[in-house]
Image 1 (cartoon, rainbow, N blue to C red):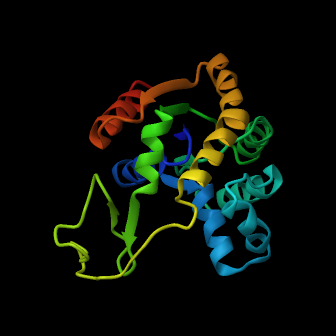
Image 2: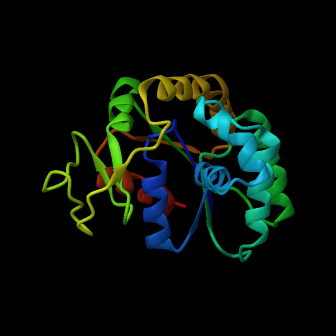
Length: 216
């Protein structure tokens, strides 16, 4: 099964994709993670996309699609894939169709996580992670049990993503509305689109997604 999770940055696509990986043995292809890895490793692509990502902009369709195509080549043909954060534009949607065809795959579901922008901003700007083990926390919704100490590993160093600030988040939301929302009718017309309340509890969102996939 090959599916797309749509929604603005911070909608919870990564969390739900991770659960699908664990429950169904699928592979999450997160363009955000792939691009951040390239940026952090200082690869040629990373040097190009770093400033764009810092400003909250979108990386070119060609670069992102090339990353996706390369990743699919390394996977077993029968392994299900979750596209997280891709496609973001109509051009990428067309490129994905071609990429899937070349790899003998078909698209089964497109699930949009619907969100409230103001609540989403609050969700994103408050998140931070343990610098040692990567456990995620939030200033309001998930604080450490002991102030300044990770619940999991006891580490006392934490970090925040540099682009998790209100200005950048709202820029990314505007980009999403302008460039990604227009592809939704494309998938709706093909009978592939389903919508889930992305502001619900994590378990409730997971249950809704599972019901869509189990329906065929």
